[in-house]
Image (cartoon, rainbow, N blue to C red):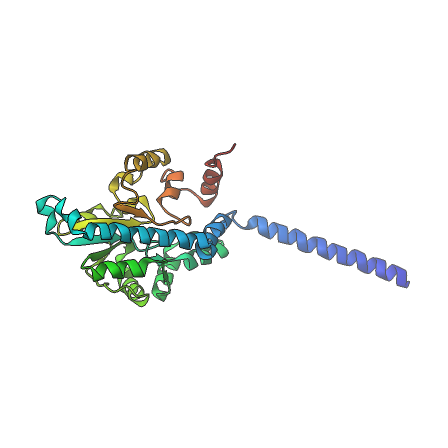
Amino acid sequence: MSVKNYFVGAGLFLTTLTSIYFGLSASAQQAVPAHNFDYQIGAVLYQQKAAEYRALAYQAYNLARLRLDEDLDKKAVKKLPKVERSRPRAVIVDIDETVLDNSPSNAYTAKNNLPFNVKDWYAWGEMRKAKAVPGAVDFLNYAVSKGVKVFFISNRDEVQKRATIDNLKGVGFADVSADNVVLRQTDSTKEPRRLAVAAKYRIVLLMGDNLDDFSNVFERKSVADRFAEVEKARETWGKRFVVLPNAMYGTWENAVYDYQRLTEEQKAERRVNALELP
């Protein structure tokens, strides 16, 4: 065999191997379910890297302090009905994305192209590594110093309670116990838990990242109905209700899916079809 023929043959052989390799790779990629959680990456990056996110969190907690100080003013108390004046004050806060930042958990699932799943969520909670949302510790500890009772009402599952308490204490919250960390027992609605607090305290503020953290009127409503309910309560936002930003997850996304059990492909289609174009 001449040198020329040798190199021509070798070149053809390598070309064939390359074609086979890329053909197999393409087939392997096609065999993988078309789940794509890249849409989560932007949301996680916003929470982790955007200074604007931190500014919004500080803004929410600064506003909460202003509202609490207004309520602490004796002149404000005199305007209340007599039956309310002597009742102890309380502030109700959600936990996840309201006082604790779970974006590393969402980063893990997004980077590994995984949907939300309870196993990974529990594992993250057991790590007790969630950081405090900016402004949360300072505000809630200030509230406690003024004699205000803080209640952490969350839809974390009851089995997560020990790890949740440890995490909250670990980031510096002053008043954390089994009594005021109120997790989900069975039903996901928070209304009964809020009413239990309201039976003994005067609730000055509610803070959360999800409309369901404030009232049951928002629960399981369509996108349009959620908009309508927000309009009805427009005078309450920034006064008794203070919202924290969370683009990663929430009932807002469930509303896009009409609260249906959909495949990941169906969810992706819903997200695209929900976009408003020019």
